[in-house]
Length: 318
Image (cartoon, rainbow, N blue to C red; front, side, top):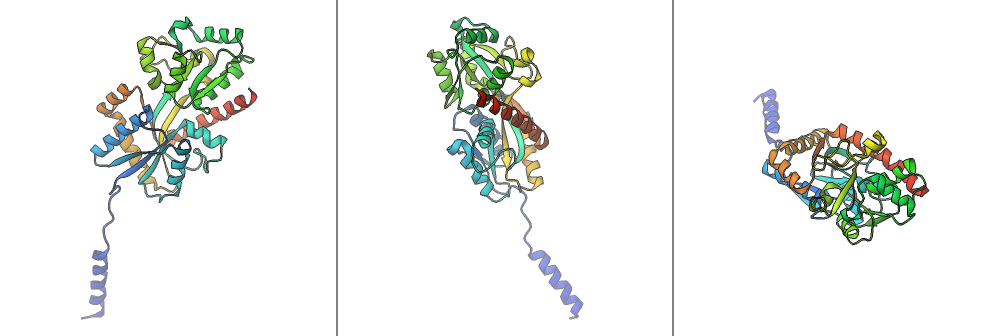
């Protein structure tokens, strides 16, 4: 047998001995959820995971709430960047990573994959208070320094930073204290019990109280009025374009995750958020699909980052 023939046989044998690379994903994907089970964001993520699994991409949701989600973030950064572990996080962890040393900055140390849920902020009072507008609430706060407080979920909530900016820019000198709670549910309960004068939440947590007539919605931070409560004005209408804010909730990946994997998962989420069944389930929860691709998600994060840093200055001045 000639040497050339032997060489060709060896090459063919080597080619056929190399195992074919499995197409991604060939095992379940895990998503660490910053929030605890049962909340609007967690429920929305589980709807999307159910869609992904049904369409051939098994996806498991694991709640990682330790350190307000920062522990889960560190685990994602320490994992192999192979596209099998993602972080589902948003505004509150973004803020925490700016004001405390949690080992990373959400803006800098992760790859944005897809924005999934944007929740506008909703400012509500008890209906039996007789207050019909935000202007009335502010006027009462002026007349009663320190007594017209408002609650929100966590001390570092987007709601607090939005209100701090608004008070500093439009109502300097008004003393309207912020009262932090561990959840939007607790903030609502405090308002019902008369312990606060307002609750600043999101549609999903305020919805049942608004629909029952217990709460009145005085203002929303969305770009346009909400379809479900069209009589409630936006803060943008009253105070300008700077007063639009949404608490974002999106997927993040290890920064070295291959771009084709990021794009594939992002497209899967886009397909899910267009699905009529997913949309119907989101409406039942009280959340609105808000897909953004990696680049647009990055732009939204940068805008949110600017608003939060301005809010930090306002909080420090109060």
